[in-house]
Image 1 (cartoon, rainbow, N blue to C red):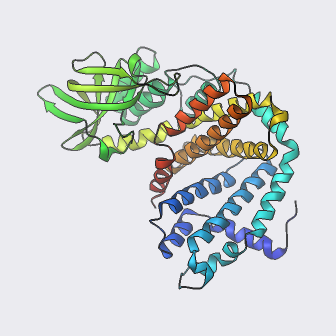
Image 2: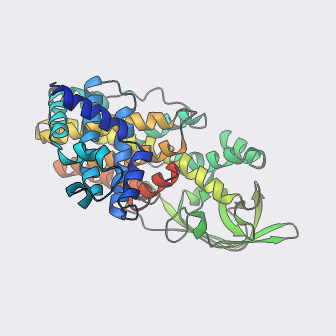
Image 3: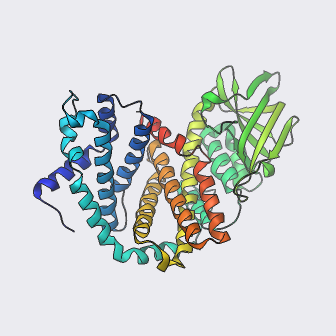
Length: 422
């Protein structure tokens, strides 16, 4: 790969170091573009690319291509943010810092082209290895995050429905976050004696605790809940519903027996029959408080981070399944699409692996979900477009459903900025 002039090498090094959340958000604030929703979304997408380019991958050439891709996208982004300040110095304090990268994208374009050219001859080999990965040693999904993640990845490569999502990825992980009060229920799930699910979102589909309207009223011997929860996974087979409802202290978590009075579970139409979703209506329904009253907002935040990591594993499996479908039509693949699929898989795998680390920051789960969502949807759409068969179309609907279940792009880009504290 050509490395360009010493000046260009220095430019790319300095610019790569500047692609951080703090520096880029400071740039936006300095140019009065911080409230531009399109640029905020672009900022989140760029931060995901930058994180993927810095995460460990098994292939040096692929990692160089990811870095080049982030630099190329970064050059476009800072140019758009500077706007009139790029044309002329209008007093932006960071203009000089980004001027060279924003005003001349050609070094980054050339670097990206050269990096992609390096991996193009090995694309088929890379993707065939993804398609034939061995899932024979699938671990128990009730183990730690890595075990659950691996089980979800294997599940994503399959073509069936499973209670892993609601029972393990949502309910069990939520119970583990509150420990004491949830320990008995968690133990029953782990022993296979109970199936449960988490009912957090309401009609908007948002997981924002501020939007919880289901009411919780204290009684002499417990609580009563009234309201409706939507987009609840696996509710028909759950013996216990973990419901987020609002008391006077704020959102709180409650356990509700599925056969308790006032509970009505209704299946809703979905685009993916393998991902059944339900509406759960509660009418003066008896419930037991789990954890501290008013702590439900924190639990929802933690639960969605855990859910995103588990879902990203499933989406990675879907991506690899889509690649497997494409492997049977490799001579029909467009060349640029091949290279993009390699980069998508490498980025998704690197960020999902990072999210499984015990010390991973909460923003990494969101990055993994974004990368795996985008990658699985693109690959599944390509497979459906090239083959047109029922399997590929079914996979496309599943990938799309998974990418939108927790809010989709309209939410997850802002969620990342929130997790980064910016």
